[in-house]
Amino acid sequence: MSFAYLTHPYSTQHEMGPHHPECPDRVRVIDDHLRAHGLLDFMREVSATAAAPETILRAHSPELLAELEYTSPQQGYAGIDGDTTMNPYSLNAALHAAGAAVRAVDLVCGGEMQRAFCNVRPPGHHAERNRAMGFCFLNSAAIAVLHALEAHGLERVALVDFDVHHGNGSEEILAAECDAGRVLMVSTFQHHLYPGTGDNPMADNMVNVPLKAYSTGEAMRAAVSQRWLPALDAFGPQLIVISAGFDAHRDDELASLGWVEADYRWITQQLVAVAEKHSQGRIVSTLEGGYSLGALARSVGEHVKVLIGAD
Image 1 (tube, rainbow, N blue to C red):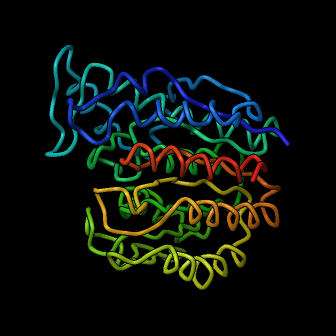
Image 2 (cartoon, rainbow, N blue to C red; image 1 turned 30 degrees about the horizontal axis):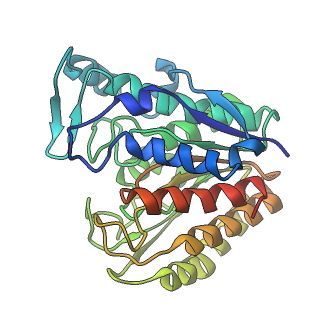
């Protein structure tokens, strides 16, 4: 089996201020951890390229792209919302994060790679069709799903989101495809945490499982076993795209769930088993949240070990 690791220097040049939790060190600590533990020895390193406009416009409106280009500062910072800021590198970072996910789909669906992990930022799953928000500018995972459908002719793609925050942007962008039966979206998230959505799915073929604050990985495992896996098995995805957020970890101060590294290993094992059964093993995983740097690096390490079969 062959595996791809995609990243780009722009991921470390985008920053939103010296104390912002969505910081360049997130990508650095993951890269350092994977190298230190020899995991990149099992992967081909691929430099991301910027996503083409026509690829982005499957998921986002021309108005959003124009707004991001207009807002992008020549120096200093420009605000998007109370939590989200652009510096001169932010737009290029978002374009390359989306481009990493698209390139990963091309590699996996083209048969060059079986699986891929994209160590990129900014995250994307809060970005809606016409709105950047919540640390997110472009929705890389939704762009990847639509690229798999339109450019590679797949008929069924699953989007799995285990970030601690609900992926409101992914849900909005993919609602029509879920209703059409071409996409299944399954997610867990902390109940009533930002952005406060997800209790009532926007479409059929969406399995949202809110988790109570202070619940542990045991609640997640029950949700996956009882709700996700039957839906995924019935759907039979030809590709699994993962919005891989690691902020449900008990050390992450932006949320109140109690997952540990073993939970990320377990959930990835379940998804690999589904992929082996239905998807020729094909998985594309792209980084979303995770703000406790040590917990983030260790959790991604467990995720990647399972993806590459080193677990």
